[in-house]
Length: 299
Image (cartoon, rainbow, N blue to C red; front, side):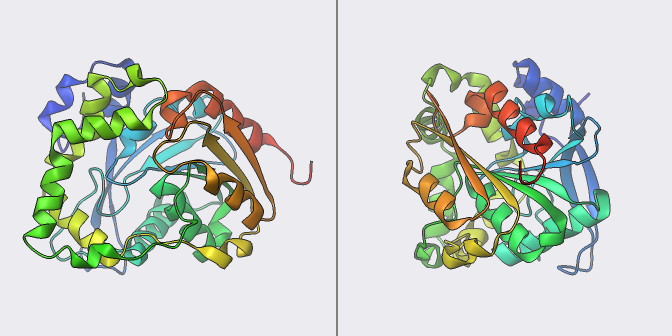
């Protein structure tokens, strides 16, 4: 039975991995320096093993992004997926800041409260930028880093600062539109048949949570995640870069740039795959991550 804090439309899920994840989702009150009140933080946890894996979702997404990958990784490792501050089903209290710094602080206290040992940190798309930021600020918490079609290389201008009312609400209304969301989903896949009704449901469930639009506007106005540029050379952890060969969302040029910028890194291309290898090619993606997790440093 899914948790009571999840939207009633969770009953519309049809894919077995989606239903299973919905039944596994939990919430924990995480105390942080961001606000006096603890933040009700949503996550999923499966499996057991020596080194935990922590999965970080992309922009305007949730733990459901990892519905196909999480159970495969959990066969051999304790595996976590968490909803970042301002995203998914994690609480969006009106007085909370929704910025790169706040997200990183919240993620650190989630890690410290529930995991508290070095992790294999996996980030996809914007989640890759969040994972890079976390690794740079808390290197002791990250044993290895995995970037999946990651944002965070290119330096971008903060156009979001111009999202003032009513422009902000118009922008989020645009993103709420089912046709727009489906178009984004279709573009994310190489195999367009994977942009199914179940996939669309998974991608839209969190839109029903209180203050979804306000938090998204605040995050965008804060500047979100820009490029890390020369800071990438500071990453000492072994890093695995996985990239869909047919990524139409971010393109493919940044894959090689990440490999050049991060000294101890390797790049693996996923063929016949778009922007979301963890959804489109979950078995292949999981095997690469598990092989990387088991690899001895220097081998």
